[in-house]
Length: 252
Image 1 (tube, rainbow, N blue to C red):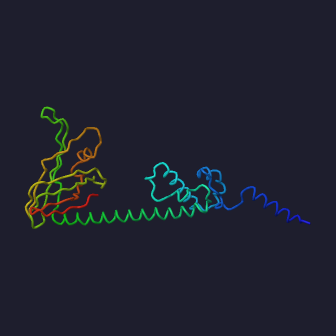
Image 2: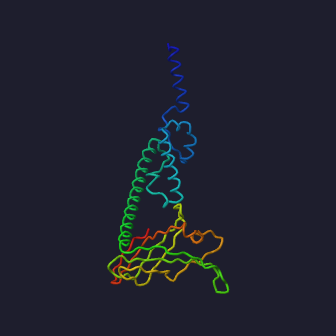
Image 3: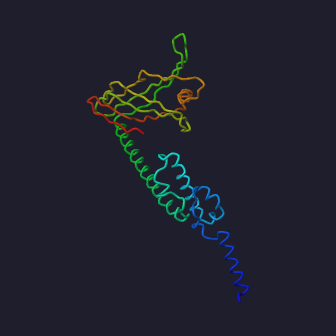
């Protein structure tokens, strides 16, 4: 004879089978993994949050790869894809995929840091030979009678050749910030004239920058900031000595 306790236990077991009391990792993906995730949302909430988030990222990457194969690194679909696989198997695949993505990101970041270090070292070598300071900034207003259809930003620099060699060419970028240190903009500069060793040369490069009124561009912010509140920093990119020796910083 079956006791009342045994009957209750059998009934509970039957209810668990009918209500999918199996582990969420045993859920099998159908042809549409996203739909499977939606249909089994309550069961999947039993998984640790980090596993749910990883699985969601993995499936999104898989779906994105269908649309833009080149946009997703690795093989998020895995051999044969997800249909027919369990959530547990998918998580194992997702962990391998995430490890591959992390390795790729780490390699890219390491390469970026090496490139930045090489650029800084090259810029430091150039800066040991020359330095540039902003002496004056002024704006020539628009004057149609004189043939100026736009206002012009003019900059005058002092270039010091600190080396023992004459310099033939210096290129770089001047970064501008306000008194609070907030970035205003930048301009590319090129000093294409002889600079004697140990001397300071003043130069406006014979150049100016056109201003477009009302557009709020970087140049307008630079032009509109008072000289007393304007900080200029020179970043060298290349230096050519009179004997043809070239120092060049990799592009950023």
